[in-house]
Length: 276
Image (cartoon, rainbow, N blue to C red):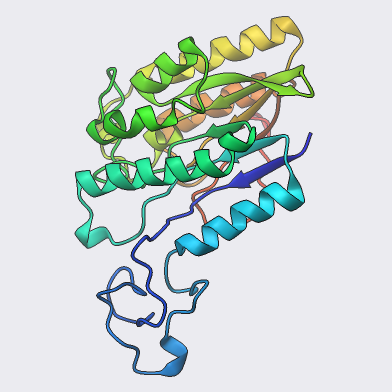
């Protein structure tokens, strides 16, 4: 099975070629960034390493994935909102997620590619803040969540997605079921998610649900692929991280691999046995 992973797009629809990439604000290369003081500080047509991604670059990347990779499955691992943190609002975040979601639909789903998305820590407002202790506990996600209906095609999966931000869907390759993709809202364990500091409980019963999913797959002799945003490493709170680690340990024969993002780096993480 061949998969493509896209994550941390941080698309900036205000990216403006020629503007200053060293403007002193949280995000530069924008229409209000001013002209550069040096030629090398001018934002290029396709992007700048000091700025967020231009729309033209994302569209070119999506085309490359379709035409030269042609994956069986596309994992979209969160974080679509740009880093203009000082000017973000609830309305702007919701509009951004709707817009990027439609772009993913237009460039993958409409071509017949199966997309499995996961929420990123920037995909809410304020960023990093996920309550998730009761259904629809996050206003920003509640408003843009319907934009993911083209991806979450099962009714039961759609309900858990709309309520809590996690879901599972079967994976099919050439018409044959090869396992289940499980999308988790790992942002609830992020050490910048302040609600999780004061509540020692399973947010949205996600870990309980996750365990039941793995039990079912074990009984069926099947397997799982996990996708989430925040890795269960240094940035995951202990009360969640230890329970999650225990499930990875117990069901290591079911979980074939997991995809996370967030760090803006490519790498591999080996999850060791809890007794090691």
